[in-house]
Image (cartoon, rainbow, N blue to C red):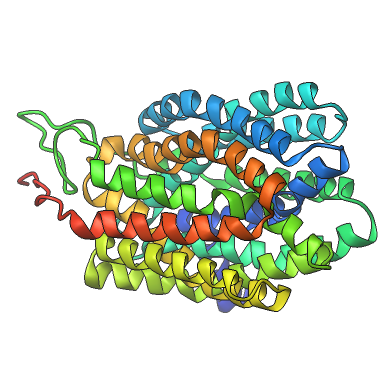
Length: 403
C-alpha cells in the first residue's frame, strides 16, 4: 500500500505525539487561558465596588487555603503514576469556581468562592512543573524549554483579550478563560501514563537513588528567605499595576499590551535562563534575576508613566525568566527525584502564598493611602534583599548517590 502521508507530515505527527510536545501544547493553552482573566481580575473586583483592602483580603483568603492544600497535592503528585489526571481535575475545578465567581456581586460570597477555588488551583503550578520535569528528563531539554510555551501562549492571547474586553466587558474574559482551559485539559488526554517517567522510589540498600541527591530533602533557609523577599517585592505591583495603568489613562487594551510585551521577551528569556543555569549554576542565575528585577521595577519611581511601565515590563521578561527557571533548577539540584514536586510546591506555592497572605492586604492599604507608586519602592527593596541573602549564603555541596 502506498503511504499517502508525506514524510514531512508524518515526522511532524510523530513529533507532536511525543510527551514533551504534548506538555508544551498544554502550557501554551493553559497560559493563554489565564491571559483572559488574570490581568483583569483587579478591574473586575473594582467594578464590583471593592476597595484596595478588600481586594487584598480576598486574595489572602485564597493564599491561606493554598498554603494548607499545596503540600498535600505535591505528595499525591509525587506518588502518582498519571500526574496529568491530578492536573486535569485541578484545572477543571478552577474553571468551575471562577465561573461561579463571575456571577458574584458581594464581598463575602466572593470570599467563599475564592476559598473553594484555591483548594484546587493550588495543585496546578507544582503539578505542571512536575510534569514538565518528568517529560524533559533524559531529553537534553530543560524546564525553560517547556515553560517558554506558556509565555508564548500568554503573549499572543493577552493582547487579544485586552482588545476584546475593552470593547465588551470584563465578564467576557471569563468565557475566553473557560474555553482555552478546557482545551488544555483535553490535550492532556493524549498523554499515556506509561510514556511519562516516574520519579524513582526513595533510596534503599538494594536500590540506590539516582542523581540528583539521595536521602530526604532539607529546605534551605537562605533560599526560603530569598524567595520570600522576592514575593514580598512583587506582591503589590502584581496586584495593583493594572489599576495604576488605568489611573494613568490607559485602558484594558494597554493593560493587555503591557502584559504581552513581558511574555514576548520571555520566549528567548526562558531558553537563555536554561543556558545560564547550565553554565553558571541556578544560584547565581537566581541572584542576578532578583537584583535585576528590583532595579527595573524601582526605575518606575523616577518615571511613573505608561511608556516607562511598558519598557520595564519588556525587560522584566528577562529577569522573570531567570528567577522562574532559577528557583525550579535550584530545587531540582538539591532534591531527590521522588520529592521534587513537594519541594517545588514548597517554594512556588506555599512560600509565595504565605507571603501574599500578608503582603496583599498591606499593599492594598498602601494603594488606598498613598497610591500605587510606592509599591515600586517595595519591589526594589524586596528583590534587592532577596538577591543579597542568596549572595551572602553559599550552600554546602549536594551529596550524590553512587550508581
